[in-house]
Amino acid sequence: MAQSPAQDAADRPSWPDRLGWVGLALVPSALLTAFTTHVTTDVASAPLLWVLPLSLYLLTFVIVFRDRLLIPRQLLLALHLISVAAALWALSQTKHESWGVMALTGVCVFFLSAMVAHRTLYEARPAARYLTEFYLWMALGGALGGLSAALIAPRIFTEVFEYPLLLALSMACRPGVFSVAAMRRGVGSAASLLGYVLPIPASWRTPELTTKDKERLLMAWLLFAAGLLIIYWVPWAIPRLGIRTADWGTTPVVVGILVAVLVLDFFSPPRQLLAALLVFCALIWLPSGVKRGEAQRSYFGVYRVQTSSDGMYHTLIHGTTLHGAQRIRNDLDELVNDTKPATYYYPGSPMAQTIAIVRERVGEGKGRYGVTGLGSGSLACHSKPGESWRFFEIDPVIIGIASNPEYFTFLKTCQPQPDIVLGDARLTIAKEKNESFDLIIVDAFSSDAVPVHLMTAEAIRLYLDKVTENGIVLLHISNRYLDLDSVLGATIKKVPDAYGMLISDDTADGSYAQSTSTVALFAKSEEALEPFRQLETVSELDSGGLKPWTDDYSDILGPFLTKRGYKWGTAE
Image 1 (cartoon, rainbow, N blue to C red):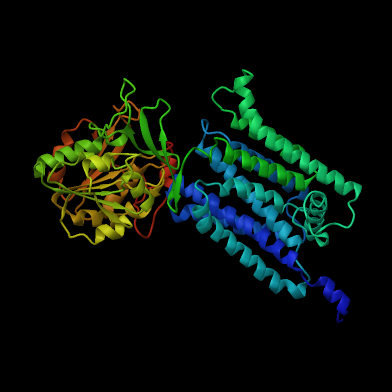
Image 2 (image 1 turned 135 degrees about the vertical axis):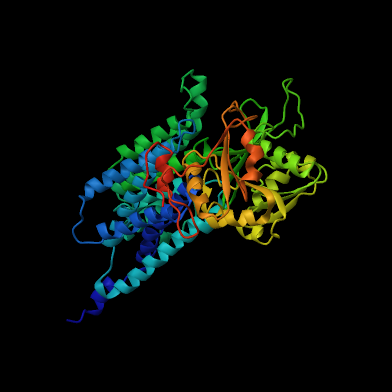
């Protein structure tokens, strides 16, 4: 039976409807990208870590795009609220971080936020004749979400602010917040209220504010004002009142108060959204897990050059990992230009010992050295006059940091005109002549994440092709999360005519001056490795039951578990 023109006009989607569909699809899609980027920055850039969140994202459509929801609606909303509150509070502190807790809360809040948004999206679907348009707008929202988190956010935010922002915006995806009627009523009421003090066009205003509308607006304004006062005054008042916050800091206290408002205001979704946005403001204005000081950002992560708490060092932090340090003050608190390499590169480190043995073999003032990963430029000060050192770096931001003497002076002092090749090391090293390096150092980590393509059997074969007959390939494999020792122990078996060993450093004091590290050495013959076997901390490579990494296969779960003492499979 044909619909009447009036009924057809009533069913036809309006532009607020279409924008609502786009928004409801955008938030979970952007959250997928933001959360996955966060995980892969700290663990590894590997397909597996993208597949799991993506699978959960797709699973939410299966669960909620149906007439009868598999989980009670109120339970879903309650779990979502608790997960958002827990995740935001976890982001508020920096001194008690745990990757396991962050990953668990991150997975839960992402999964539940996507379910809530997609359920609201399903309930907002139009009549059947407009479903094609509905799915088109939904696809556009998903695409915009991925683009905004992957391409736009790194350009406009200096730190990963999009993650807490999207957590807060997930509250806008709850029923009753993103509806057309609610948006019109909220905009109209706010315009009516502002019309008393601003020249707001009469057409934008609600004809007459009801008592209920006035109460809603009053509560929203009171919450907004109180939230700003909490963010500003609590950090100021706590130390002056003598209140002890142990080593947690004041930000968790501020966020805890706002999170309590978020949770307790369960029956007012618009005010919950406002409370979540106030939490976001606190996280980006106060020191927190996403606000750690002056930072620079690229598509490869967030970099911070900071002064150590004792004022003695400038440090380079990439994500959550220390990537270099330089002493700037002596024991008399005088400014100095100390270019002695520190952290993993100090004179007694495995890397320094390897450089010294290679130099003794080829002769001082001779030899060609290749380094993937510039960092703060520490390794430049291991060079000697007459030697050829080439650095392979993918990120222009790192080159700018290492070249800026206000941050680090390693390059300026030791190699004023450094030979730096910009681009992916796997591709740029492939263009070098075979047997042209005496030593290649692979130290190209992003935060604590592993660039898997630089550690495969094919990559190791490439490095060995580029070193001389007695040349050495060194891979820095210190890692908090993955058992890379066993990975390389399995991988070397896939590389013909390759020999390897490990050198560990357990004697470093763990300060900025000396950091413990583990490196793997590879060569074309056992004879080339013989001088290194005289070192006290040498050990043999062992697969530990893991499978080798190749360009076609890599396994993150295995080394993640074996790092924690679990056995994993059997090496092939």
